[in-house]
Amino acid sequence: MDDRAYWVALNLIPGLGAETFRALLQSFGEPERIFAASRAALGGVVKPDIAAAVAAGVREEAVAPTLEWLAAPENHLVTLADPDYPPLLLEIPDPPPLFYLKGRRELLGAPALAVVGSRNATPQGMRDGENFSRALSEGGFCIVSGLALGIDAAAHAGGLAGRGSTLAVVGTGLDIVYPARNRPLAHRIAEEGAILSEFPLGTSARAGHFPRRNRLISGLSRGCLVVEAAAQSGSLITARLAAEQGREVFAIPGSIHSPLAKGCHRLIKQGAKLVESAQDILEELGTALPVAPRASAEPPKAEFSALLAHLGDAPASVDALAQRSGLTAETVCAMLLPMELDGLVASLPGGLYQRLA
Image (tube, rainbow, N blue to C red; front, side, top):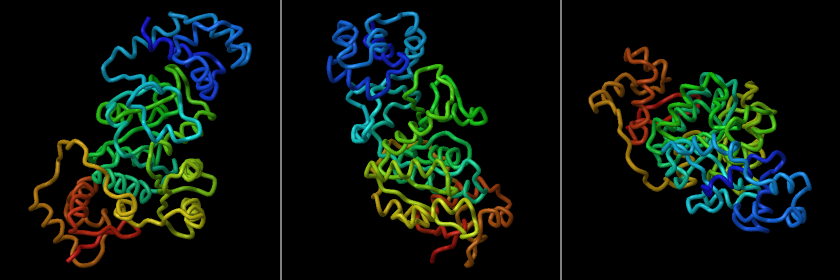
């Protein structure tokens, strides 16, 4: 039998959480030996109902769909026994014994940064989330987020636009996309980045899954940036977990009148680093190690000069530049990022850009 079948079979046992799973591994070794143990021996480690389920053996009909899914080259099962299990995850108090991955497995070894925020983000927050993520991805960081609406979606889009790409951590099985509105984005991430879940295939979205997902978002990352967050935002849970895991926490300030700035302001009061540009984070963490270059659709240098002429000497927003130049806002954003990295322009608070001498 495929060794992965034993891992999957344990993952499918109801009530067998990560802590109990690890206890079985510690007591008996690899999963095949766990299934070979007697019910009495198992009962010394786990509850009777779980001992009985393990002692019943591997149900081949139960694991077959997952093994079939794993037959596709883009689908992976990563366990604690694998050499490319992310080292940072081993540092957190509750690492998953296994997880499923769809997409680029090599991203597990890339330096990563979490970017999270409100599901009901403002247009400015969406632009900040995407622009920061794009610049950080260009700096070599894989952008980690949770595939939710709002800032998460913007972060993934920005990560895909840079060379570091993006990794989505979800609270469902990898055969389910939640929320459904992000299906096109999820398909793109699966092709160009990666999607990760510790939940078996077929697992639907449940409220209790998302706090567990959040510990992996922060656990995979060297730091966590909160773009927008209300006072009771779930993003604050991710930020708290990041701090508890010894990660750096960053927050973008906002208007004192904005409800979506209150969470970020609270984090800053608690010691999170206030950031006004992606460069603030890159200076704190250092530019990540180079990753494989990606095909780029950078506009010609002549267009850079034309956009600089439209920028003039006074700061301007992306929308203003789009109106002056006749370009779309998306094209202007794509042009501003390499210009910022080349030191031609600087991003300012409020989504403004200024030409540098």
